[in-house]
Length: 202
Image 1: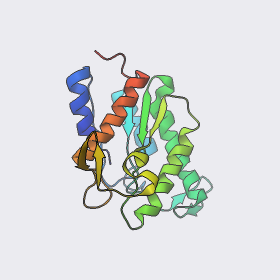
Image 2: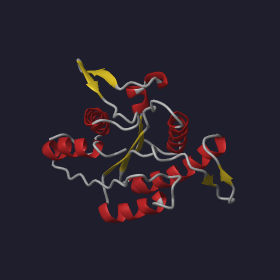
Image 3: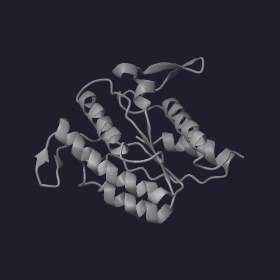
Image 4: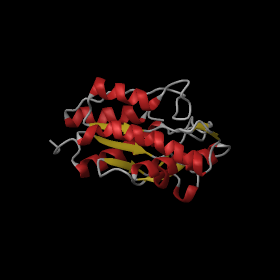
């Protein structure tokens, strides 16, 4: 989900803020798909490699698979136990990305999908992320893209933004278009500016 958003962040931040944006997207991965990539473990290697001041995370469209709890029990999506296990994995990543208070994390929630099983999965993923973030201080921020793009869970492929009507969702009813990604990037940058996560604006 971070693709296009990372491009928009790079265009806005590197041009104006004298910061370097490193993109590390992994297509078709998810916290419930450890056979492709074990995200909690991979997050640790990311922090060793980049040591970032700020991390932006946007994931979950490929989740919804059964999760194994710490006791070994496999639970299907998307009931309470699944959300709790998803939160546990996300919480481990949040702790890593926070870097003991040296880093900021902005984790984007999923805008609701248009149709199909995604409409059940996305709210469960978002619930797990919100639950995980409650255990941290202000350096872990949740960006509610779901409220911006799909208020009250209502899917919109076109929305009005700053006086213009823009197509913000791709034809699959899941991903953001470049225009939608630019809006998402604006939300992240606005919050980073409020937090002064990258220092004062130059």
